[in-house]
Figure 1 (cartoon, rainbow, N blue to C red):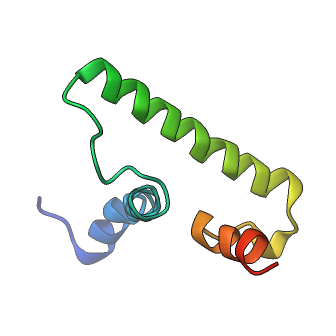
Figure 2: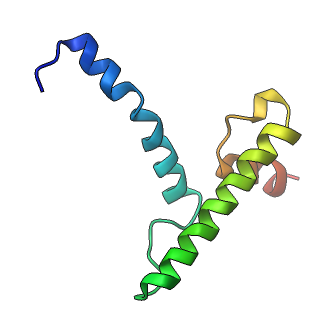
Length: 84
């Protein structure tokens, strides 16, 4: 691509957010390992995992104060379940 530095930054800037989501899905949710050798089962597993990710995000948006909304699932688990 023949872009100047500012246009390159604008092009890649929106892509950086998805990398953080993928990292959270691999670290906090069990997405790093494919559970079976069957495509349909893996697809169902992936959809259930994304559904749980969305549920947690809606919970953070609707039920938690603003200082907790950017926390990862691991941090939420630690603060609400392990420490008490």
